[in-house]
Length: 218
Image (cartoon, rainbow, N blue to C red; front, side, top):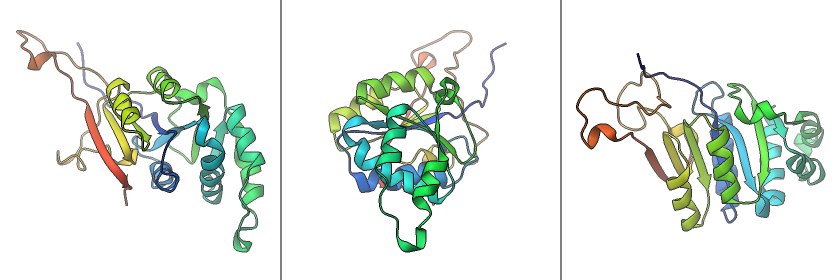
C-alpha cells in the first residue's frame, strides 16, 4: 500500500546572476551552517558563472572558518583556490584552511544528504542549468534561489519540482512550525494520490512558496 514517508533532504541554494552579494553570502551561510543535522539544511550550492568569482571566495572563507568541507567541481575549485580574499591578522590560517577543505566532487556528491559540515559546490551557466541540475539531483524537499531578477525568481518557483521553493530566504525555514502548522511529524517529498472518488482537490499536491528579503533562521 502507498505510504507517506519522511525521506532525504538534499536541499539546494542557487546564487543567481544578478544577486545581492551581501544577502547571498548571509543566507547561504545560514542555510548550511546554522545547524548541520536537519533535513532542511542546504547540502548543495549552485553558483551562476557571472557572480562566481565575487561570491565563492567570500562564502569559501566563511565555510573554512567553520571547518566546512567543500566538494567542488573543477571550476569552483579553481576559483576558491586562486581568488582567496586576504584574511585579517586574527584569521591568518583562513587561506590554508580553504586549500585543505576544498576537495574534488564525485558524481555521488550531487545527490548526497550529508547532515554534516560538508557541502557540494558547482558553478553553472545560469538559471536554466540550475533548474535542470536541481530537478535531476534534488530530493524535492527544499530549494532556494538568491536573486534580484524577478523573472528568474518566478521561473525558479514555477519550474523547480520540490515541496518547498524559496526566493531570497534560507532553506532552514522549510519547517512545519515555521509554516504555522504546529508540531511537525515530518516533511513528505512524495506526491501522494487519493483513493476512491476523486475531485479536483484530490488531484492536487501542495507546493510551499516562500518569498523573502534575506531572512535567516536564528
